Length: 473
Image 1 (cartoon, rainbow, N blue to C red):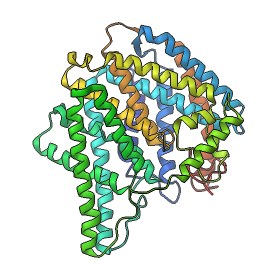
Image 2: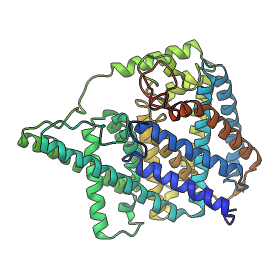
Image 3: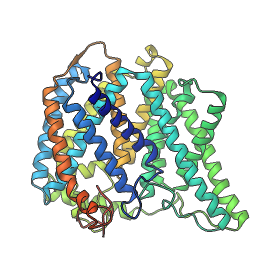
């Protein structure tokens, strides 16, 4: 198929859009801030990426291979989830916006399949360039942030973060991006799979240390607790195989906290300036508890099909989501959809761990076993973080989440002895319908912004905080 020039062009556009989203958009804004905010610019690129992938899939006869004994059960569960999401969206206050979220998640699933195919067709090359892209993204961000730090240090003024040095509406969005990357960027240092030079390795150590410094400066208790839980469960699951990764993580954590103390405590004290705006040690949880209680109340009101995808934002004046992924799906999509999703996740996790447990790692190369360990850590840590933050809401986090899912699918398929090609007819039809619904449901806000009716995009729900777009108030 890729021998055809139009498909080559489409494929190249997908790759360029994806790399731009993951690498450049955390630091660079491609549209003037007076027209579109960072968050909305990232969302526009995400929509573009997803529609390109849906068009690619709708024209493709290539299917993703997967193990026979998993295909039927998972397919039935996903079909049921699709039906339940459609019912929930149709019954909601604003079906167009509910279908906007449903179509986005379906399209993200196609992103996972696209990534899985990339991984299967060229595993080493894909991992190599994916890590390079993350390193480049972090490098851009660090240059941007520490330039602001230097300016604030010289002027003796507090550093205003996340604005203007970042592409994140909220610091917690940055923490999500951080937590998705914090394990993966260590892969080359575990086994030198990228065959990097000593100079590159030294720069990587410095880069990751400064990346950890921002984790402490951002004062995210949730991210640190999620990291610790992820690391603990990884060591319990893989035992001695996970020890090198654990040592490397603790090394960077210690180096990061020392760097944080030096840059944001000792130097500002010597300079008689204040650069720290928050601290990790806080005892407030009232905002989360209130949101969780409201989500539980919404579940009681509409337990079967929920209030509708994205519709927590219609029931809260400030927060557009409950900062808990399970409560979010349960209150918005309904308990049936939430339970189906959780059972599907546990079922897939069981088979993946059955293939990649510590006994099976003996037969894998060091590179493969480290990749398995890092993928496991990344999923567990981010799932834990999704219990207290909107990990499944923001565009960059969504793209990275389904990228990891795609790599996991690709890793499982690559190691399978018995695989089959699934039928592509239903998937191609679903891709077409999803592209149409995604375009239809997102276009009104985009057209209003293009016509100059408002800065950015506004859905019109009661919540002030962003959900799909950053709301215009």
